Length: 208
Image (tube, rainbow, N blue to C red; front, top):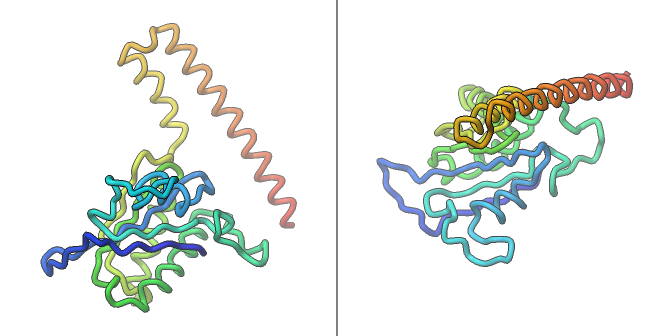
């Protein structure tokens, strides 16, 4: 797995308040954390390699990962090693954290905060549980500070069904517009579910 770690130049050593490290996970599914989160959102340089004044390095060390394998520069040499579930992705990420943290005593003192947006919210939850189990078993030498979900896409159907009422509440839709929006959303959800069933059946056939 490809990862990029920044140690903050703003780091302050206070024994009562250890300097944190943030693991940033992108959504997508399959968007590059190293490319998007790093250069387009919170890293020290923007896409033009100019300093970003709002970088999160001002408050933490930053760790970006291209996750899951097959994303960005993360790759596998055998196709059967591509992950098929969020839990498998969490296992890969936990293995990566072991490699990074278990050999770095400095990082072990920093509380690890796992942050994500969009579909990455699912990775945050599954990785948080996986990492916590590994820490408890003594296999991962890290301190889990918490998980943070930002505009996460963890329940698409619930999210999109809330858009119509929200737009009506802020006077962007009238009753007719709300009815049309809800009909469109329900039809869209039906199409997505039907497509997913077909994709899953094709996937099962290929792996028989």
